[in-house]
Image 1 (tube, rainbow, N blue to C red):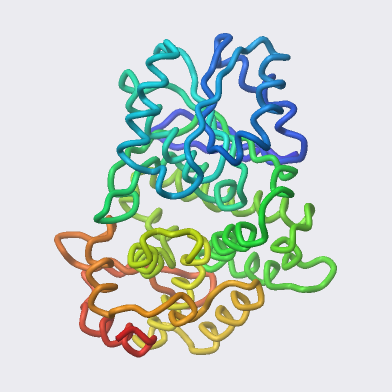
Image 2: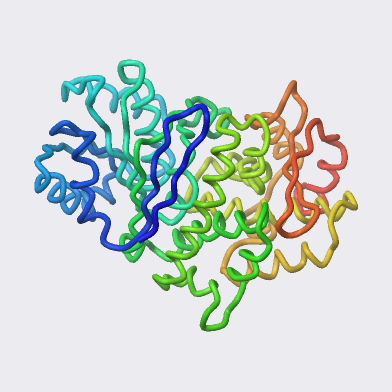
Amino acid sequence: MTVVPVSGGAFAPYDVVVGRGLLAEAGARIAPMARGRTVIVSDETVAAIHGPALQTSLAAAGVTSEIVAVPAGEASKSFAELERLMDRLLAAGLDRKDVVVALGGGVVGDLAGLAAALYMRGIDFVQVPTTLLAQVDSSVGGKTAIDTPRGKNLVGAFHQPRLVLADIDVLATLPAVQMRSGWGEVLKHGLICDADYFDWLADTSDSGGAAGVRGDPAALERAVVRSIEIKSEIVGEDEKEAGRRALLNLGHTFGHAIEAELGFEEAALAHGEAVALGCCMAFRFSVRQQLCDVADAERVESVIAAAGLPTRLAQSGAFSAEALLARMAGDKKAEAGGLTLILASRIGEAFSQKFADPTPVLDFLREEGAT
């Protein structure tokens, strides 16, 4: 078991606990802050698989709980589901000293975290992420949000959790596509600031990290810990994404635009798949702008492809270059209508380019296969 502290000047510090068997220990860890009751927010799939174990653990620690389950999938990050969840919290009679527990992937964590931020102007919540993607990314850092028809995560708040419990054992229940999706975010962390970590993730030897995408527990635990360490350091320095935290969006400007054009349909393209594809595109665009060596872009594409993740736009469908560019211009990282891109000078060194010229981006999208 490893404890990664997350701290910053603007928020109360908390721990991210990474290990095996943590779901059974959750009650003892949550009880000191739950005052004897809590509401567990989950999705219908995860609630059926892991809900009973969490409730049993809480009950053993003297905490009563009820589960509010939302439909599985990105569509639950909506005003309608947020309103329904808020009403359930009110009906449960939670007050400002109670706690909400998010049990699930990024959708559940975002929705439950935003509800906790809004409920009575803010109550505590605990993240129990059950997907690799959520463990290494969305459960840490305090970003909470819902989507709108105009884009992803455009309505939300920064609301840090009190505790994050990342149980490696729960990942054994993940479908292969969700494991690959999470691996896209894992690889991204190496690409932005740790070339040695990326090298280990690409290593297919017995001691290498590549086995993690196939579910090897030891490789997964090491990858989750290192990814959280990277994110913790960045979040502690820049909670509100005024500077360095923007680097965590490598792959997201291209990736979010593609997801939006596909209607955020996970079956068409999972979020981590979109991020992996977006990372490849960011590196290729960096080469086009003479900011990065072509050998680095080719290696990124090779490693991402070896993990079973998409590397080319055509693998995800047919797209309009103008439509993708419009989505990118509407991204929440854009400023004063100008594009903000996260690009790379090499593996392990990303940077932010504000007010990017849209013309070469449009040309690049057409080169990538958009019409």
